[in-house]
Length: 287
Picture 1 (cartoon, rainbow, N blue to C red):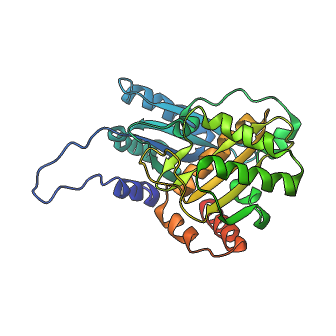
Picture 2 (picture 1 turned 180 degrees about the vertical axis):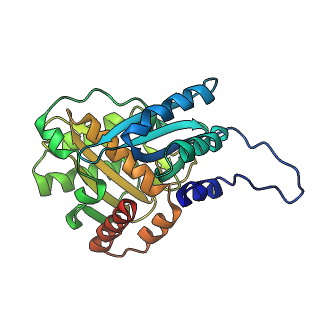
């Protein structure tokens, strides 16, 4: 079994016996597992999961990595099924690379459902095709980092951000604020642990944009854990950029589920340091 797969077993606490020598059944939780492997192994793995996990709720999505002969799988499955999935991976695709593993909340918020729901059919558009390589780190520039933004509540934060966007990019503040508020009306975009990812599709926008906002004081956000928000990633995308939208949401979730990343981010004192941190984590993922 490869080192990456062994590391995942350790992360999940598998193969360990409690101090009293008795095994305990952990509450069932779903996890999201990302795997990169040769395209030829994707179908055998899917067939193995159908055979082994047929009585459990799970889904698999496949995204080709163009020009590499490899694909990226997103597996959504019960925690107790991960052990079997790892064993299948080790047998069928020993060169598979494991990415970040995320534990899905027992009661997912609408923000989490944005990540887990099936990907909408994206418009076959040359502009979106050109954007497929855009990542959160690539979209985040120093001028997109707002530190110490004064906002007493969620609505004020959206208003302040809309005014900033109008001043710097010329798009009416009301359009930006309305786009964010419309999504928020469906349910809080707070992910918990002090993180929120408000996002909206803006009709007049021509390309995806990402911003990091750190309020001067944590802002109440109706998050699932009840904690106020101190890290805000704002995503604005054109109406047609569905796949770009979902990919950026997943990128945010992957970054901020890492508590070490959050700690380092809170230690960044200026805009350039924030951007460098996002870039360094992206480079580490690529390596």
